[in-house]
Amino acid sequence: EYTDLKQIFENPYLTKINLVMNPDLLSLAESRRIVDGLNAINISLSQVIVNKMQKNSSIDHIVREFDGVDLLTVPFSEAPLIGIDSLQRFISANEKIFIKQPLEILNKAG
Image (cartoon, rainbow, N blue to C red; front, side, top):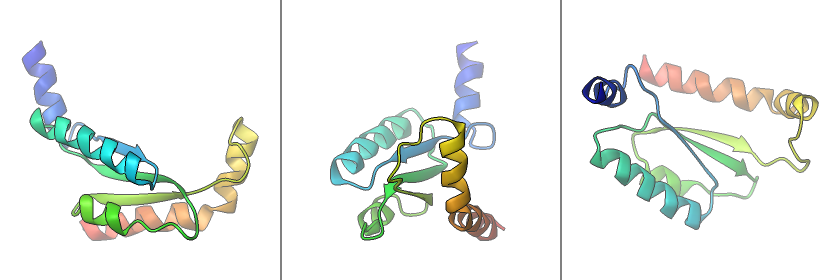
């Protein structure tokens, strides 16, 4: 059973690992440790999602660190995202970002 489960986790077609992080240096260091741990057990990273992006945020250091891994960004929300209504408003207000990024990833893969 363990061997079967391990093979599933190691297969990138069956298992997708999405790392969610904030765009600060502490989060980058924590994320690097997580990825190193995953690599040590033969589990690959599918994509990095950078949360709480502000207009003046730079993600160059994240792009360099996770070169070759798909990267999505989620804008910072001024209002707390509590409840379905606030989440739907946030998604609607940022719809172009959420639609554009996955299309870029799909186009890159194809």
